[in-house]
Length: 330
Image (cartoon, rainbow, N blue to C red; front, side, top):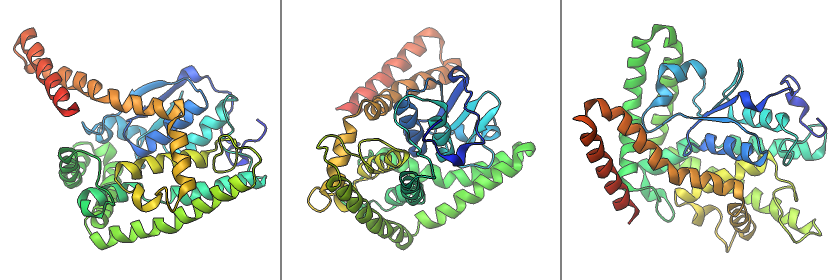
């Protein structure tokens, strides 16, 4: 395919999208990047939710799909399994001729520039920053937008995860190495996110990155004769734009936009994010997040059904959950 990255030539381009299954969760940072790529490329796929709220990413069936990785999502195409988000995006770009070329040929200057920005953005430990803010909410510039109950649950569950993974390693000897690897990674992150000074250090490193992004967007604007939609490298959206947009979305959720891309000092990033938020592909992810609570309600009802006293109990539970959701919305 013309214009594609030569670094992905080992992946077959003869792909039937009907065989594509994406295991993901809408609130997952890496999942959002992959979903945005799928939507931008208009790739049809079978969705399979992996509920982080219910710990499904730590269940044996998922660990078999992703034994060494720490990410949700995973892309499965027949017998092929890809569990690195950036490799999934490369694969998505190669499998579809529709939409923008997300990964330009590395032999071109554009391809090299896109790869450089992707590498810079991919190196940001978003999970550490996210949990760092959750554990130290006063570090948020304008206040984390997650409900306090959710933040408390995230803190408690992260601490419990280490014991849970060790327990799973004992219960499933064939997956022992995978569980212990995940446990070790989680322990290393826990040491960082519970140390305020280390979290501050990670946040400080973002300042220079966003300074570079602001300069890049300004130069792109100055070098273009088009006053319409402009992204990092011009009129065409690339994989670098996907990484940046989802990062901006996460930082906004954490209440950090006032620090990293305020309208006064970073007008180009601010306008860029406002523009991307209007895209149907981005809004599609937001709609799915908004609908997620109903999906989780159904899962909870299915799990609780055996313990209910018949159909009446299910209806009572459904009414209770509906009341809770309505209350949260107020």
